[in-house]
Image (tube, rainbow, N blue to C red; front, top):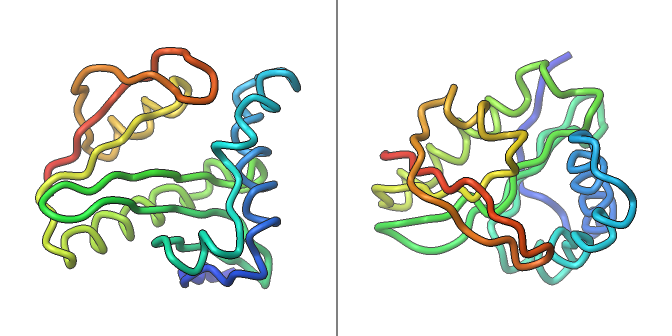
Length: 150
């Protein structure tokens, strides 16, 4: 089935939040940890209206999302989540490539990524390089920070 990449719709905000939490849960986190992540991973209809939220859809079903933040020359990949059944099917790569193209088109030269430790190998595979660490606002744990030059 073909993968459709399109802007998110405000009415999809709750479904996108649940997709992000399911994707985060793919890494084996317990319910307590995921509850601490909920606020940070929640998208509201207003967020979808004012932020750069893009979805991947297959056969009418949401299978991934990305959120770009910031402004050129440096932008941030604020979120990139793939529904667990679609992990490993190329959805993440298509979304990442879309994020890179959108950031380039906006005039950015750098895309910053604060990655879940489980997702760091994916980002390195698609060309991002380690660039230090950051601290998660929701959990306080240290995350790998990566840079992708555009």
